[in-house]
Amino acid sequence: MISGILAIVGRPNVGKSTIFNRIIGERKSIVEDIPGVTRDRIYGKAEWLTKEFRVIDTGGIQLADQPFRDEINMQVEIAIDEADVILFVVSGKDGITMDDEYIARLLQKSRKPIVLAVNKVDDFSQNDAIYEFYNLGLGDPIAVSAAHGIGTGDMLDEIVKAFPDKQQKEYEGMTRFCLIGRPNVGKSSLVNAILNQERVIVSDIEGTTRDAIDTPFKREGKDYVVIDTAGIRKKGKVYENIEKYSVLRAMAAIERSDVVLVVIDGETGIRDQDKHVAGYAHEAGKGVIIVYNKWDAVDKDEQTMQKIEKEIRAQFLYLSYAPILFVSALKKQRIHTLLPAIDEVHDYSVLRIQTNVLNEVIMDAQLMTPPPTHKGKRLKIYYASQVSVAPPTIVLFVNDPELLHFSYKRYLENCLRDAFAFTGTTIRILARERNR
Image 1 (spheres, rainbow, N blue to C red):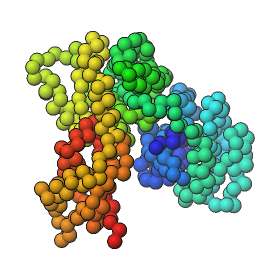
Image 2 (cartoon, rainbow, N blue to C red; image 1 turned 30 degrees about the vertical axis):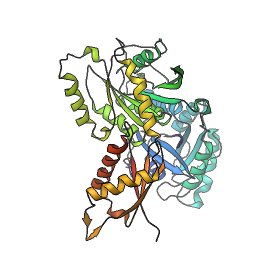
Image 3 (cartoon, rainbow, N blue to C red; image 1 turned 180 degrees about the vertical axis):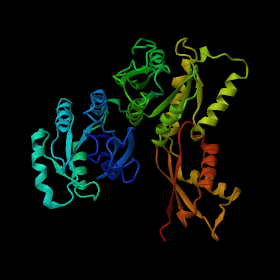
Image 4 (spheres, rainbow, N blue to C red; image 1 turned 30 degrees about the horizontal axis):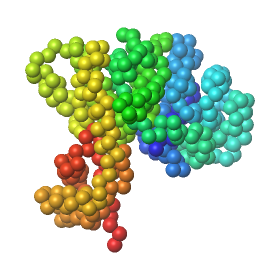
């Protein structure tokens, strides 16, 4: 379970991207010794002391250029609004700069936990250099060298210690679902249509919704929580595409949801951003429903729905298991189909299969199509066990996990779907070597 979100902020060229890569354990962010190289907000997942958390690497901004003052404000504003913990990175080689002091003042107003990392302290003889950073008023500075891995363990200890307890017991036993998608696809209108009330402000202006709004409600004796993901407000001349700011808010809502509704604008059709954001729901293992909104605005005949469904399947190949619903929030057409679909997808995401029944399906699949040989060896599946739900996760105990090719894994997944449907939910299949 995701414990929270960490945002890495700081002025350019202090090593934010290097620290980001060190935390997530891979070179995902561009690293170059030139200020301002990171131009996109990069997202990753990390784990430390059994806690999983999201990490955001923000691009540095040159405060000396006055037009960029708005951008640094937005960088810090996004971090303050969305992160549970903020990692403020400064340079031990440069000492405190005016830019550091400016960012520190902005962060102090956030009342969010702040971990202060003094980077580029490459050996212990330089440790005295960190003491001046007490003047920033952000607590104890931690000396680190992201390039060599020095001090990163102590830094991560403080980060995970600062994450709040996110148990959300108030929503226990309730089906939680969120709506994600590009700005102005009709998410807030859909929320209002589902609730049958004007709960959320609706406007044609992109980014009207400022914060994620949780609304518990009851329908036909069942308890739900709908999470309307926030849009993005435009502030100043921003060099980054405004839609990129919506990704983090969508990710935060996805993590708290059981079922995710991927909303597509029927007027503009499918865009790359739709596929990009939907990928997070798939990777998180959540139940997924594709909702084609503004159906009333589409010129259609008897074949239109089939054509659009075919196009959606072609564009969202990884969501082949997700049901597709065509609705109009404005006209409240087909809105009654949403909650039954959410119930069905949620039920399948928590479905447990009896071990003997599961093994019958797996063994029959092997008999119908034996695994292919690889370098003279053939995969043998001895037995299977479902180890968790949401998403359903199947462990196969085999002679050699390396022999489970992705194509045969896909075949087994199709066999499981033929037997148990698993509508709207991904299936994770893992291979483990059987203990001798």
